[in-house]
Length: 208
Image (cartoon, rainbow, N blue to C red; front, side, top):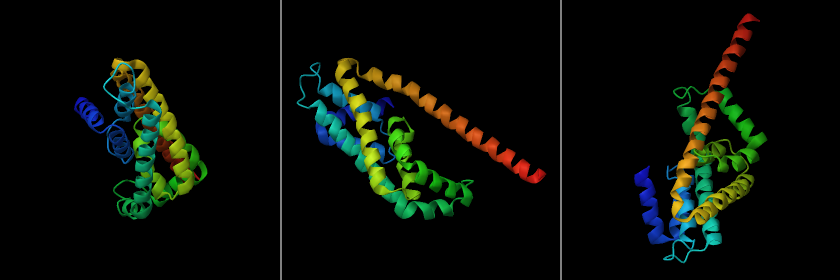
């Protein structure tokens, strides 16, 4: 992770806005490049604490948002065009039944807007949510709109935090790393709950 952060610093120092757009696009396209390093450092480059840069905070936020949206939409189309056949092909190995895939489709049809929006504010999940959204064929216009606004809020928070903290911007990553653990724990709890619920349902069917 430290190597990646140093690489992010190097890229942004050399490429400026284009570097922010490119790295945010890659992060949203399932490449594990932490936006928790990209945006805060971009914000720091706009602060008075760093006088060698001509970057503007509003433009950093906008470019970061556009990059995140671009990468997300790209992965959405990859999921929509080729993801479903691939998942169905390996469904048995992945322990996925047709009912699981149908349930995923229903969730994205019913709650797609909320998933697309709030997932952009969650570490880890925000990187990978676009693929299942595409596989489930969520409305692409709604997906793009909610992704944009979710990414905008995320970019504002992290960009401004880097601007406000100046040379201490690196602390933001360590703070958000704690949030990573909460997200992982929540996902594990949900998986355990789903497994227990499925077993209870099967037990009731057998009894009846």
